[in-house]
Image (tube, rainbow, N blue to C red):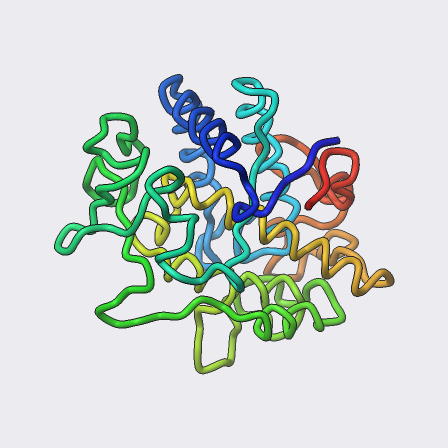
Length: 286
């Protein structure tokens, strides 16, 4: 059992060790393997293939296992390192310590949005983008999108999602109008603002966080650690509500064979959502 801390509470030494572990994984090539995995499993509604990672009920258990695998790789480099989380309802400014030179670096410069500060700046020679959808070898960001401003989700936005009494709902994709999973993942079908909560954070950061290979930006891990914490908060708020769907969808359902029920193994690990409902044997949150 280890502890995941709010990034704002990390000591200078903890920040340095986390950054050093990330850079070590990058040098070894393992970091880019995780980036490629996320890209491979980002399957939208329109694609006629199984969806394990996004726009699907298994969004939370899939990413929990993904983060555990990544955290295990970090801890093989430095056993004292754990994933911090970014509470974007509190630290919502480009001036937050999260974006300081000694941690994740800041926003991108005008023009090409290239990040020029911090340990992941391409100019420092340590962070070359190798797995990407767009051109460019450097990390890009556009924090807050000043040319057409976008705001981060608020505590009220999160509270509304956690109030959802059911985990997910038919048709089990990005168009589901109710359920915690789609409300917090952020597609919010039927609303005037399509990009909410989780999705809105990706858009606020901008740059490489906009695509399927968003783990190219190290802030991805802090964002998804907070998403994992929000799932825990929803579970505690609704102890009588569990993962849905509980059983495989019937053959006549358009989502048959495309979404993962409670006890159906998810790729690429062959682990079931039911095996990932309880985080407490691995870690706790501060």
